[in-house]
Image: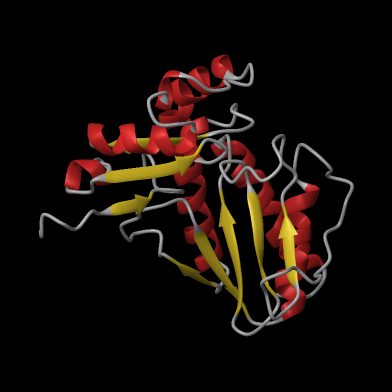
Amino acid sequence: MHPNILIFVDNCYGEFVERREPIECGADLIAGSLIKNPGGGLAKIGGYIAGRKDLIERCGYRLTAPGIGKEAGASLNALLEMYQGFFLAPHVVSQSLKGALFTSLFLEKMNMNTTPKYYEKRTDLIQTVKFETKEQMISFCQSIQHASPINAHFSPEPSYMPGYEDDVIMAAGTFIQGSSIELSADGPIRPPYEAYVQGGLTYEHVKIAVTRAVNQLKEQGLI
């Protein structure tokens, strides 16, 4: 690589999925969110950076002030959750991955298309599910919400969201708002009708939620 080129990787959704992280494969700097994989479902806020020492120092100076860097800054009384979440994160990610494999294989057996396939190599948590109609997609996402630990009594509806040309449906009955290590399903309502299913603090929860979603599709005559 050219010495004047720095490789920076947004590692969101990828932490602990593969045997090696990007900085072990030549990246100079990586960053991610603690409400995703590395927070283990416990961290409510925060992010991380890792990589070359000199670059980390420069990031610290940009965050606070030159000469102070990462030696000072707010911890928001959240260090316990961050440290414990990081400790649990590899196991929680393994639960999400098992859930994604189950989702892919089970839905394939229901004659639905999924990406990646259950037997393919994975680099992140995201499982794409393709539906034939928007009614199937909406019903599936609503059922995922109904199987959630929080706000299970809500039924998400497609609606406008800034940055999208089409209405978007988002199912995420999570303990932490925006958490994608917890089970969620979302996507824009347009062909091809694809929902992005990701996360799951426990394999059992993913299995129950996806099974219920398929049962609901059957009951409604959508599959």
